[in-house]
Image 1 (tube, one colour):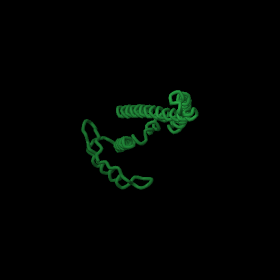
Image 2: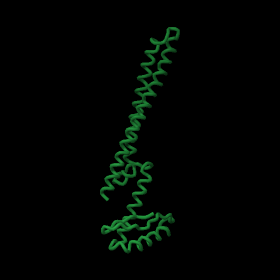
Image 3: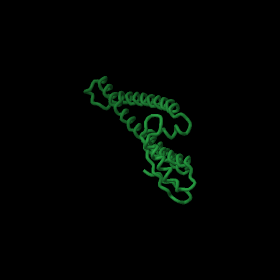
Image 4: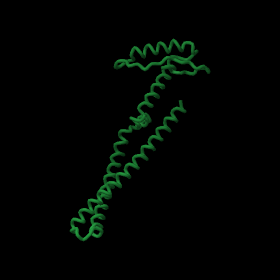
Length: 177
């Protein structure tokens, strides 16, 4: 792989390899890549080794961020300073509590409505208590179906908004660089 560096209007391809070095230090592949990059960039003029290293690190970070973007969507927030783990735990707790309360209220409402309406809809051959139980069960099933559809719609909307926010942040970072 090559890291393309533009210096004084000339584009220079600097050999670049991501090593799999041991713990705690750069591997031989990284050291060789650095040596090759230094040798290749010697003709690049006055670009310092620190600048080349900074460009390599940026390139590696950009590739890594692109690779894990769909897995760790909160990584961009972690880099922004605030701890997303702490923010997410409080927010997700509140969201879960609100969702659970909403689910209980909806299921209770549908069960009560189904229990009251069923004896009037079903034929008189059914005993009243059996009709109420069947109506309540049907109301709970309909309530769960409605809540599931609403949950999927809400989750898709949040995922889409989160992805758009991530793309805007990445585009802003690329413009800044």
